[in-house]
Amino acid sequence: MCGIVGYIGSREAYPIIIKALKRLEYRGYDSAGVALINETAELNIYKTKGKVADLEQQVGSHDASGHVGIAHTRWATHGEPNEINAHPHYSASGNLALIHNGIIENYATIKEKLQKAGYEFRSSTDTEVLVQLIEYVQVSHNLDLLSAVQLALQEVIGAYAIAILDRRRPDTIIAARQSSPLAIGIGDNEFFLASDASPIVEHTNRVVYLEDGEIAVLRKGENLHVVTQDNCKVNPQISTINLNIGQLEKGGYPHFMLKEIFEQPDCIRDCMRGRINVEGTDIALSAVIDHQEQLLNARRFVIVACGTSWHAALIGKYLIEQFCRFPVEVEYASEFRYRNPVIDEKDVVIAISQSGETADTLAAIEEAKKKGAFVYGICNAIGSSIARATHTGSFIHVGPEIGVASTKAFTGQVTVLTMLALTLARIKGCISTEKFQEIVGELDQIPEKMKQVVKLNDSIAQLSKIFTYAHNFIYLGRGYNYPVAMEGALKLKEISYIHAEGYPAAEMKHGPIALIDTEMPVVVVATHNQQYEKIVSNIQEIKARQGKVIALVSEGDTQIKKVADYSIELPRTLPCLDPLITTIPLQLLAYHIAICKGKDVDQPRNLAKSVTVE
Ligand code: G6P
Image (cartoon, rainbow, N blue to C red; front, side, top):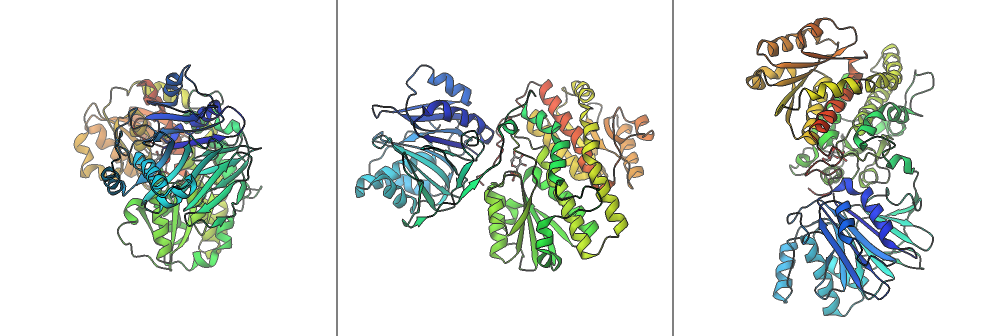
């Protein structure tokens, strides 16, 4: 949520930071801005409503020279997205420029204090308060910038990743972190900074992730200097990152979302690599093996997550309860963190997050740790805050997900949850060897079956054209396919702006059935499993009310195909692995409907990929 970048070195900063900003646009894209210090120590700031491309137009032929700069792409929290509220914000004297990701919770109190001291504010943002505060502290105590930042931040309550330039010190950027991610790339006599490592990898693979409370001084020609607010020196831990640029590009696809849908067969193979044996008969998740004592002694499991990850969590509950016979609860992280949940050291909390930066999930983890629970993370982003905050965990290894609507991360999360449940069931001794090997063998086949599913792309694109008229959609599923129905509805909502609800199929008669008429498309996930006959009846109920049924069925199905208006045939698998197959056509359906409606699928309105505020 909000992307921040910076560069200091011997090269021209502007092209580097604009490119970096584009890579971070998935985090927010309602306005953008850049600040650069040129050779004559002028601070040039350009800002605009809109995307980074609009910013480039705005800069046009103006002076964008200089070897140091910071830039920002915004997801508005305080104040509407417009030029004035866009970052960088600058201090009253015009000497300091600052970019910020996060929320300053006590900004109103600080603002009032500064107003009393004669400060005037141009914008409605909490960020402007921060830059004015730093200048106020600097001037009133006659401090250098680092000391002023250290002192000012002691007054601040909230979450921030910030970077500051001082017109009078063009050789330095100061950056600080509290509960919002910040990565610093170390190059050859140059530094890069960004909200995540993705814009840094094309320049260097040496990265330092700042920790909460740390302040970094990026000074040309010197080593990275990191201190705390109390001025204690910190030895920065340099990580080597293995991201390749190809993973960050569209690779010939029109959108990241489509690319990421099509990548799923390979991603799931990568996710299982080294965890499933070559014969496809055994599986082991090392974090489960290494922490079996904590996991086997659990009284119950609680899974916390948000958005799509929460849907994966629901599937995790079904898997762990079915195979491991532990009670499992699933909670929205945002609710969990504030309701003083009954959790203690006998509980295991699983936190699921693609980005590893979602503020509510991170806070839920802290709450669980405070109460003594053992916390297991399932993340995609290596080096992310959640990956570091949990006691142990498993990465899903599906590569960077750029499209705002999550696709491959969902199937990756479900794959890891399946491997977790199977490994745990095996060491708990509550699954027969036969059953275990049957599921592992079938899981091993999933990437091949996914390849067959993505081949349905063209026919789903054709089908989508029929439904652009719809203002509402219902998605229904039972058992493992109920969370899939919810995820399908979420995908459609997120990118096409069509209202959609996912329901357990049997619940339809307790409310949603009232909505069904000739106009209402109902997507039913009706693959072959124990509840097949029940879902056939649900489809009959919809047809009796003239609803339009789009059914996902198993290959060879004849019964539903006769009743449904449209059917999508999918390769058969075990019911517990169905979500890995049935989710994909729903991703494609949402994608193509949104495309037909001319929507921006990779950057849908009002959304952000990484929600680092509450
Ligand atoms: C945002 C994204 C969703 C994502 C959710 C949770 O809302 O747009 O796609 O599912 O955050 O994100 P996380 O990174 O924690 O999985």
